[in-house]
Length: 292
Image 1 (cartoon, rainbow, N blue to C red):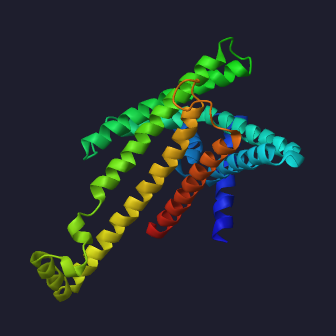
Image 2 (tube, one colour; image 1 turned 60 degrees about the vertical axis):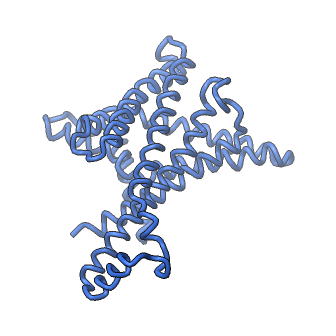
Image 3 (cartoon, rainbow, N blue to C red; image 1 turned 90 degrees about the vertical axis):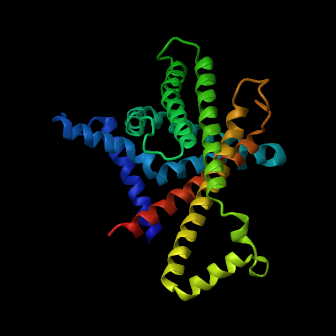
């Protein structure tokens, strides 16, 4: 039932965006309507389970279709049809991203230079990542418009530029969780078995036994830290899978660009999408649990 409710909420977020796109909100009446429109546009970026489902379905179709075309000649026609479905879902996501610039701008403006971030390394990583993401959207829009014959420009250059910005964002996004995980990881002494711990550790253990409330507080903090590290590791793996595909879509001659078969692109994308969808669902459950 919870999964059904989550899917219904995701569908509702897209219905709201569709109303905005079709202009059925009626004439705007000032700042309140603008804020409402911004909330509509930001729903996909916050926790849009349906967006991840579309992405996952597209990459799964590419994975299965690529395997059928290469490994099963008798079912190659089915494979080609699945690849067509995958391409159309990818185009669908490209069109939906036409309305993400404003939401991204609001997020970038709110974060600013990250003055509230304690870790200066994470701070500047986030700033650079926000800049790359902000520039990515207009470049992709121009490439899309060129393919649609709306603009008379070379779409290949703009696709290359947008892919390069996406690659940079993913690279920064992979360094960030790796750094956070390394900083949050407990020291080796905390992981050592009781039999080989030093006298200071044994004294601390006896103190915790005498003060159960303090012990419970430490256990809670440790679990929170472990959950954060787990989340960062999943983010790292997701970004690395996407990074592999991003490099593949760069011009030939750059690392492994152009060398992935369709099924491998589908596999990397499926791994990334499933991890992202899992994290989004877990974040949604956590938000519900924390709400009064």
